[in-house]
Length: 146
Image (cartoon, rainbow, N blue to C red):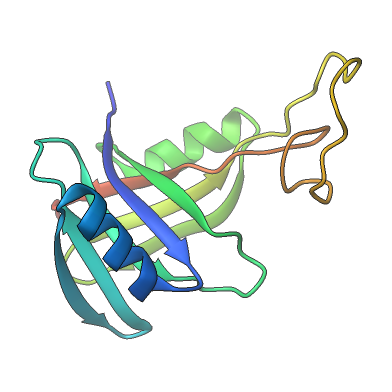
């Protein structure tokens, strides 16, 4: 079985997010300088998965938490996701010193009916509604590349 191993928050204001979660939960934060900016890791000190806080990579990207799932093989997991209808967002990306990630977008969900539901204030594809997809990143964390 695969399990969630890392949670990542992408936000417009990483400094405010770091202050908020540190004060709220007492998380231990560590800033790491990466080629594309600062990536702050956090330790929940509760035995569950830790994670990271980072600035958004793309201006159109929503502020959101993204879960990572530990797998034995990133390549095999992506192939299986594609066979189930997923579309690669990131096919295979080495993270120097850590491992490899891939990010499939699951196939669109179909709603049975929107009867009785208020309309979503979000543009199509950015919330509830027809064609909504979810993202999960597969991650080999603290393992050799592969």
